[in-house]
Length: 367
Image 1 (tube, one colour):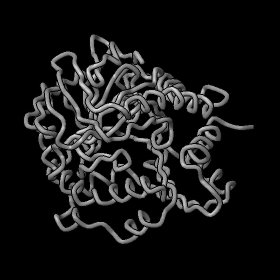
Image 2 (cartoon, rainbow, N blue to C red; image 1 turned 90 degrees about the horizontal axis):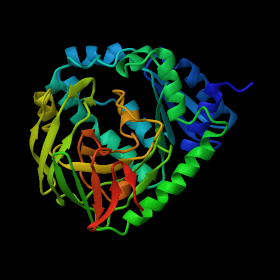
Image 3 (spheres, rainbow, N blue to C red; image 1 turned 60 degrees about the vertical axis):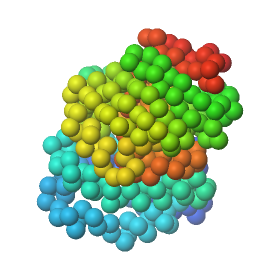
């Protein structure tokens, strides 16, 4: 009998990464709580003729590393990791946090230094993906830590996660393809647009998107999914934007984030809570005050902040803007070790104009 984990694994292996015979597949898990899904993914890769390699880690080791590592150790990336980013065909990463706050007290400067040292790995993967030489997907399993962060019981969170991934349906892939068809229509429309103008609470900001590609996200890199996004022209973003949802990055929170952007760079960043952390991350490297992404969330199974960006950026009726690295497949050129998705609720008066035409209002597309 097929279990929920078998169904989950088939989405990740068959649909998201399209594993084929002979593929080298890295399966990465963050804790023992991912075991059931990891086993199902491992089995499915073998069934399809792939070569699985398992990489497991323990969350406690990341904070130990940041606490005790010297500058030399923070800057070091071992050759085996580099080789994997060069040679692995498919990357499947399964999150199962035991503690969502394990890095909340980590040294901000060390976090930034480590991010700067490893950014070339994410650049390599993004470029290989854009060239069609690799594919990757990130997914989570329910844990008590995630449930607590979302202010739900474990059973409530489990139900929420499975529904967000459409795993409660007989054929979740069919639903993802249906979502993609709808989103592709919107993306195709936006691909002909030169300027995006967003207004709302303490928000009036324009994005030059001329020549940039809008992409429909429907379970190929993130699961759950549901968004259309692009990377705006690097020096073509101007205005202010306010993010009413709590913004969470590496276990730290910033609330009431208000940004002022000039010619594509964050020039002023204020927050009611977490302002020092916010600015420390924005000062990570040369590209970390740039804007890497603007996106519109479409997953109506997700309606509230859960504290997990994998889910929260997909909220139906919200947008998100990433500060930091952009995506090469969209035409984006901003390079950074940071990619912090900041989420804004649009359901209370938010509007999006495309070349001065109103296309989105109160959390819904009008086209």
